[in-house]
Length: 439
Image (cartoon, rainbow, N blue to C red; front, side, top):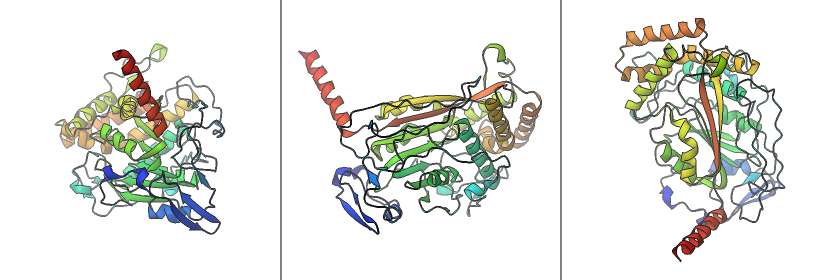
């Protein structure tokens, strides 16, 4: 997948047209596209020559996905349908999209018993480090990365529960970005158990998904259009190809330099491709109005979040960075950037059925993950192991008994890499404005 060439020298214009034989025709990689990984080349060779085309992201003739209407919610938890926008298709096309309609839904994603067979069950990574907490952690590069959470089966269960909760929060959708068709080549960063890449691959068989993570805890894919690589996404990316869609989520307790990560994603996206980031703003806030709860500010869960933020800062990790994703994407050069915010209650206190269900899942998420998620960060604040255990016990008791009316903000932010002609148009306009002002 990766190679040792200088990624700064990768230029789509330098790649010549390549033909791949197929039983049903010849698929031509346009000269404007970069090389594909060999696994993707082999997979795409089965498709007819007209299976893929350079569909413009805003081509008015490209049909949009149909979204299921959801009941209104007392909390702003209902997903927001991206508006269909027409755009003249006179610009050169680079991103490759399948002629098959995009399927953003996961059928039967709600799993009440948390059966993890969908991601292959728990996977133990050889060489994992047994920590002071009694949990295991990744050993990639000697555990010097900015990722602070364990990788053992208990954490894998929690990650899959969290995935199910996020999918439910987003009305069964794996993505919120307004993708016009199934993207040809997809990159999923920080894949965890691999549940998102596997579900995306199943829902979109004409896409090829590459999932990367510090820990090799993903199952052997049961679909031919998905593979997993071990990689620290904070290192220099060395791909020999670009992607049409890059998906990043749940990096609140990871990534020391998220702005650099975004810049690398911009570099390795095809023009017209999309990036999407989903994350929690790791804090507990109180509702306003009649549901306001003054107990939130002094609660154990609020103090837990504060301690984790302080401890993560020692590692150079900002647990509140989700609020900056939108301006960071814009600064990196993305266009059509949109931010969507959701509320995840800390328990089943809301009256709204959907919000109550999300709160039930979040409560389970806290009860199973408070110690494992926060241990390293809380140790960095000077707390002893016994103090941490006593604090976690009190926080769990509070979650199950007090029914504090608090919530955590969750963000979904996405944007599109401009086409070259869009960049040229903006440059020409800026030059013209500069000349007028100087005269």
